[in-house]
Structures are given as C-alpha cells and as structure tokens.
Image 1 (tube, rainbow, N blue to C red):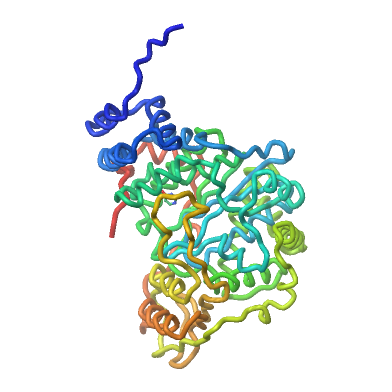
Image 2: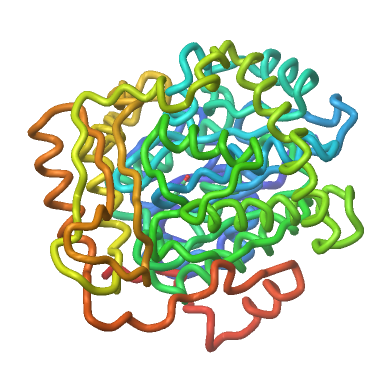
Length: 479
Ligand code: URA
C-alpha cells in the first residue's frame, strides 16, 4: 500500500514551531527519533529547541514529547518481578537523602523500587556519588543485573544506562549548551521520560521550592509539579507531586558518606533533632508510594506502614541487603564514625549571638561542593553519560550542621563542622558557608511547612486549566 503521508523534514518542523503552530504527536516522534538515532543534525535540533523555548511547549506537546523520549531506547519491564513498581523523584537540593530511606521502606512494604538516579552537579548532591562512598558499591548495573537485585531485595538504586532514553542524552546536552533548559515542558519531558522508562506503576515527585531549589520561585515549582503529574498520568503512571521546602539543608549532613551515615542511623530507629525533617519527609513520600502501589487504602495508612517499616528494622534489612547485592561492604556500618576519614576538619562557630534568620541554601550547596563533596559541571561534550568523565568526588567531604533555621546561637557556639579535601578548599568552603548564613536579632518570616501542597491528577488538571496561574510559555523565571 502506498502511504499518503508526506515525508517530514526537520526544517519544516522548525518553521512550524517558530511560527507558533502546535506540533502533532507524529512530528514530535520524528524529531525525537532523529535525536536518538543521530539522523537529524544537531543544529536543526538546537533550532527546534530554541523555537520551543521561545514559543512555549503546550501540555499536549509535553505529553507527546515525554512518551516519544521514554520510548526512544530500551525500557525496563518490572512486571516480570510480579510486584507493583513505584519510585520517587526529587528535583534536587542540599542534603536531600530521602532515596536511601524511601526505597527500602517501600520495598519492605512489598513493592518493587527500580530507582535510576543521578550524580552531583553544581550546588546539588547526587544519589550515586553518595552510594559510591560505601566501598565496593557498584551503581552501573546491566538491566539483567538490575532485575536480579530487584528480585532479591525489592529495591535497587543504579545509574542511567546507555540504552535507556538516548534521546534525552542528546537533547539535554544540547539544551545545556544552547540556553534552553529553563522551560517547564522541556524539563518535564526530560525528567519523566527517564523515570517512566523504568516501567513504573506509581511515581511520587518531590518538587522543591525555596532558596536551595532548582526552581526557586513557588509559581514555577507549582507549574512544573502540576505538569509532571498530568503528563505522567496521561502516560499511564499513577502520580502525585509534593511541593516541599528547600529553604535550608534537609537533615543535618550534606556530603556523601556523612549523608549515608545519617540515613543508617535513621534506619536503625535512632532519632536526632537535626534529622527530624528528613525522617518526616521520607515517611510522607514513602506513604504516598505505598498508597499509590496499592499496599494501603490511603496515604494515612501508608504513613503508618512506612513508620512501622522504619521502626521494626525491616527497612534497614532491605537497605543492607541492597548494599550487599551491589557489591558494597556493609562492615563500614559497624562503626559509622570510625569509617569517616576526612583530610581536613574545621568547626565554624557563631560569629555573633542571635537567631539563624536565613540560610541561602544554594550558596550552602556551593560551599558543600567546594569542600570536595561535589562537582562544578559535567563534561559538556555531549558524550554519553558513562563516558562523560565525571570528576571523582571526595566521599568523606561535606558539612554537618549543628544549628538550623530559627535556632538561637550564642557567639562561639558551633554552627557547623566542615570536612574538606585540602586546606585551600576548606578556606573557600568556610567563607562561602559563613556568607550564606545570616544571624540576626529577630527571626525572618515564619518558615513554610515541610510539605506545602500535594498535586494529584485532579488538582493538577484543574491547575493547568486555570489560565491565570499557568504562564503561557512555561518559561521558568531566571533570578
Ligand atoms: N533534570 C533533568 O533530568 N532534566 C532537566 O531538563 C532538568 C533537570
């Protein structure tokens, strides 16, 4: 049969987007396939991305882009595991270590958690770098190994493989180099395509707002959260998004090993006032994973199950099993403090008496990065993730906070302990941290709640239908 469909040409699609006409699903699939197979030149993909950034990406185009990118490579099929598969994604922040708690909690409640994670970049930390601070832990597994670990433990946290979502590797790298990252439609498709390629039944999104968030402004974070929920639901995955506070580091440690150690303490049932927020947020995220995965009739019952898994040691057992299955040496958990061997240690004491009125959490994230715990940027050659030449990070570097936003401190009282790789790095990290914390006579405005809003499918669709709230072009504000 002769097809009556005219062949598509990239230049026609660039013109169409440039002129503000909506694109069809077929046209988007064509461009995404061209990115994944390198059959469309990078300059044409770049022009289309810039036209999309300027003209905006509609809700329908975002859905088509997400699905086309999800399907651009190999996919993981957790259905063979015989369990419901759920995951959590966070838009990133400082000290954000909830993955090490929610994955074992949800797995202990009978769910499969196939978690594909990222690395530290800029002011935010990376789940994979934190896990690799455990000697021997391998994050790069084949899909067959990933499945085997999931079968054995219920949870596995791994890096992106070359075969998953190849279109995003090309498009994200181009966006990074062409100033087209900041658009909620493009961000949504990039994040969700990678998550949905893991074949999830349920997904919980932790969208951060506040001084340490990728999207600082609440309106941008709300728009991204609503768009991601509506898009993932339309693609067949039950999804909720929690808008959560990143106005100070989450928990008391920000770094690599020190964050793992904080989580192991929590998994052992130990409580510490500085870790209460990370414990609470993890329970709330896990509660939604458990409810979406059908292991509890509602989120309140999900919370109770999550808390039991944390308190009865079953989540700890999953975590230890997962570390072992990834080749990690669990004996380092026998004495958490003894394993921590930083090169340079310094305590930052309060320089005056008063109240910790403000913590510029992005600046704090950069201080953490400067200790040696993170990296400034990935090699932007556009090469595949595994060959990007990620700079190694110092597993023992980072910052432990002794005072939180709103706390009263007396001059000379320890505010934080910093661990750095070299004295020069320490000097810069201390200066950055000090500049990021404001001590004042009065507290600043009351801090927002840890979870300020939850979007489910209905509320996300209602939000997106409101033209006053939704900025037409979906362009993220730049401050
Ligand atoms: N993280 C991603 O994976 N993609 C984006 O576009 C932005 C953040």
